[in-house]
Each structure stands twice: as C-alpha cells, then as structure tokens.
Amino acid sequence: MSQKGSTYHWLIVIACFFLTAVSIGITVNCFGPLSVALSAKFPEATSSAIQYVFMIAALANLVGSALVGKIMEKFTMRLAMPVYAIIMSAGVFMWSQCDSLQMYYIFAGLVGFGASGIAIIPCGALINNWFEEKKGLATGIAFTGSGAGGLLLVQMTQYILGPDNNLQAAYLALAIVAAVVAIPTTIFIVREHPRDKGLTPYGSGQANANQSSLPGIPIKQFLKTGSFWLLGISVFIIAFINVGLQNHISIYVTKRGIDAAMAANIFSLYLLLLIPGKILLGSIYDKVGIAMGSIYGLITYIAVVVCLFYTGHLYLAFAAAVFFALAGSMTTVTPPYVTARIVGLKDFAKIFGILNLFYGIGLVLGPVIAAKIYDASCSIDAATSLIDPATGSYTNVFVAFGVLSFVLCISTILSARKRDEYSKMA
Image 1 (cartoon, rainbow, N blue to C red):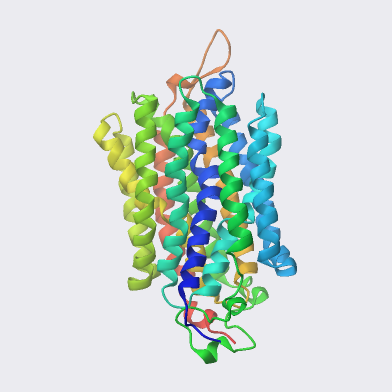
Image 2 (cartoon, one colour):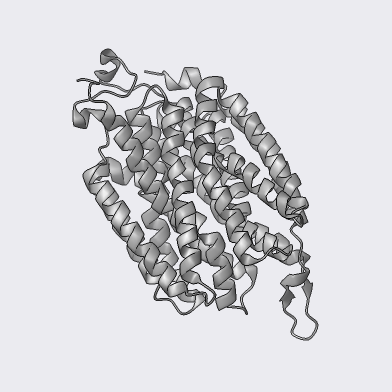
C-alpha cells in the first residue's frame, strides 16, 4: 500500500464536512429558529411540547446510533450510508407536509434515525480509520460542517420563513438540500478504509498498515473499565449542555427584549464562529492534550453563562454567542476525538456507538429539562389555568449548566488517564 496521493485522506474530511453540514445542521442547528416558528404556528403549545419534536428525533437518533455500528459492519459504510441519507431526506420532506404537532412528532423519527447513519458515529469512524497523525485537526475540520451548514441553513430558513412563518416551504427547501448533498456524497466519495483506495492511514507506517489485528482495547474489556463510564458521563453532559442551550438561546434573547431578526443574527454569529472554533479545539487537543482541552472548554462554558445573565445588553448577547461557539465546539469534536484516543482502532465504531447512547440521552433530555425548569418558573394564568411564558426565567437553567460544566471537565480528564495503555493494546 502507498500513502502517495494522500489528497484522498482530505477528501474524506471534506465528505464528512458536508455530511455533518446537512445532518447536524438541519436536525440540531436549525431547530432553534424553527422552534420559534413552531411556537407561533401552535400558540397553544407549551415550550416543552415544541421541544418534543426535537426530543423524538433525538430518541430515534439514539436508537439508530445503537444499531449503526453493527449495520455498517455487516453491509459496509458504502452501502449503508446512502440508505440513511435517503431516510433522513424523506423525513425532512414529510415535515413540510405536516399541519399538526402530532404529525411533526411522527416524522421526527425518520429524520433522527436517518441522521444517525451519516453524522457523528460514521464520520468519527471515517476520520479514525483514515488518520493516525493530525487526527484532532481532521476531526475539527470535518465537524465544522455542522456549524458552516447550520450558518447557511439557518439564514436560508429564516429568509424562507419570512414574516408569515412559512414552515412548509422552509422544510421543503431543507429536504432538497439534504438529498442533493448527502446522497451523492455517500455514494461517490465515502470509502470506509484507506486500503479501499490502496492507501494507508495518514501518518502511519507500512508495517502498521499491514497488521492483521488493529491496535486498541476490545469492546467487552472496555465496557468493564472506569474510563468507559467516565467517558459516558462526559459525552452525556456535552450533549445535555450544548443542545439544551442551543435550542433555547433564540427564545431566551427574544424574551430579554431583542427582536427575532437580531436574535437570528446572534445565532448565526454563533454558527459562523463554530467553524474556526472546532478547528481551534482540534488543534488544542493535538498540541497540548485532552486535559488542557477540557480546561479550555470549562472556561468558555463559564464565560457563556456569565454573559447570558446580562443578555439585556446587546453587546453581551453577542459576547455570549462568541464564547458559546468556542464551548459548543466540544459538541461534535470532543466525543469522537477523545474516544478514538482512548480506545484505538480495533472496536472504535462499536464502542463509540454505545457511548453515543449517553450522547443521545443528553441530546434528548437537555432541551426538554431546560424547558421544564423554565416552565416551572412561570406563573399560572388564573383565568385559563395555563402557563404564562412571559413570566418565566432561565436563571436556574444557566446555573445548572454552569455546575455541569465543572463535572464535564473532571470526568473527561479522568476518563483519559489510561489512554496510552488502552489505545495500543494488541
């Protein structure tokens, strides 16, 4: 095998960039502004009821994540990923035909399940397979797609929604984008291993490439270690905090007196800065290690919380977006990178598939629990016995997320203590 012509290594990174752009970009990043439009379309619905659309998609993604490793092992990525891309695109299209929240709930399952096969797990596995050196940089670049895609798609969605909240047209446009980008990428570019193109992993030697048994800890052994549970806690908190904040930040800033158009600009700034933020985080991991990367994440999370407490000032709302972009880079970069560094190549996809259950649970619970905490702070309208959202406060939400950021930092550092031992096991 040869590593000449290694531009294909970076073509794999570009493929992952586009896949995360449409999968995470649509299912996660676009939900913030779409949730505002859903609230306007269904004014009788509580904040929690709106978040159930996202929760069901996340639950379906959770189920899909548990299966994706085995499915791709049996059918290969090249065969399975186009099918997942079609399923997700079809689900988003069906959202464009919905006229009740219950219908949104039903088709959220298709969207979430389809996204599980083209987003974090397969893209993380591809980067781990194709890169030995510069794994952090490659991971950072690959997952900037979620921010870049989110930035463009949020602006497109906001424009199409317009003053009339045209959800049907917005979801139809997103479905077309998903199909046009994801299906050809998975068919024509994705290759599971460098050997499929006559290459070796980037930065690896010939001897390493020819090993019959890849290095790394077996899945059954890793599941019995403390590192597994600590890493599970880490990926749970990462999803819980980031998506919990992301899905509420547009709603929060509008409640603090910032109009919807400016709120969309603040959210777009966050998505724009995710692009350099993820590359920066990947480089930090490569250059100074997991511990310093975790401390960096803690500092930026605390800065977000402090700024949000004073978001009535517009400049602090923008500052919160800047820090949130730096902290939010952990959402997609940290789980695959840290997992790969700890467990090695042998059973990465299977192990990461199981760890992604923790991630998926955090994804599901974060926005809903944040909404429940918010709803609990609202007063009850005496005339209608309904929650009055105008009286609610996100203070307790931000305090809880700030505390969790400390737990995240500690659990990530502790989970990686034996990475040199585990990742190099024969």
